[in-house]
Structures are given as C-alpha cells and as structure tokens.
Image (spheres, rainbow, N blue to C red):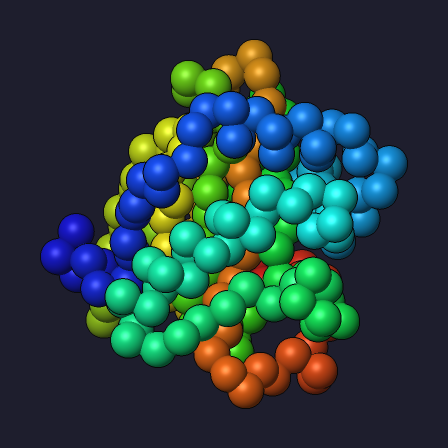
Length: 197
C-alpha cells in the first residue's frame, strides 16, 4: 500500500453500535423523504436525506473533519443544510444482495472524501481503490467493517465489490471542503460520467 498510503486513511471513531443503529433507524423511518441521484447498472447509487431527519450524521462529520485536519493541516467541513448551506454533501449507499458500485471519483473541488460503514454483513463487499502509474493501474482494497471510517483523496478512483450476502450493506459517504467553498457551480447530484469502466 506504500504507493497509496498518503491518499487513504482508515479510522475507527469512538461511536457505539447503538449510535449506528440510531442512524439506521432514522434512515428507515424517513425512507419516504429520500431523494435519489442517478441509477447505474440497475441500482440507485446515492440516497440523500436532510440532516434534520438524521441528526447523528453531524457527529460523524465532526469526527471526519477532525481526522481530515490532522491529515491536511487545514480546517475542513462537510457542507450540509444544517450548517446553512443550500446543498448536502453527504449521502447514503444501500447495496442490496448482488449489487456493486463501479469505479468512480468524487467532485473536483472536494479535498477529502469519506465513507462511514453502518451495516456490513459478512461477504457484502469491500472498497477498492486504484491509481494509474505509467501504463498500469495499482489497486488496493480495504475491508468494509461496521463502525469503520475511511477518508481518501477525492480524486482517487474507487469501487465496491459485489454484495454476496443475503442482506443490505449500508454506508454513509461524504465530501469535505476547505473554506471558502466553491459549491454554487456544481450540481447537488452526481452524473453518470463520474463512473468509469
């Protein structure tokens, strides 16, 4: 992993199993409020929910911002409507059995992106990263585990392998930015051109 160690940072925030359960409960309770961005290979990639429906996410973002500051030595934030921003730079990913996420990267103005795992059944898929060096791709994977947070450079391409369990894998993903923010020129949604083969 030496070639990627400066781009990927796994952490284990001090959040309890009950804390993750509360997030999942609010997610289920507010299922009718979810907004979807785009459909790739038969599944909705990103599911959006305002933070007032799921207030625990703010604690996740605070932990991510603290870790990200240690990495970049700059203050970073996850913009969301709870802070007065017009958009939410976080979303949920729900991978049903048999589903996977293709290679993609994140918004160009973001500095760090992250994922926090809420529910990870055994054999439900790991996250993979790749970086092109000369003419070949270097790849690295990290086990997906409940309660794990992974921060990574936003331009780093990543994917998630097929969920081979009998249950859903659920994670919370987000982007962190430095100030001043440059969000006005970008859509709140991801488009299919961000996904690669």
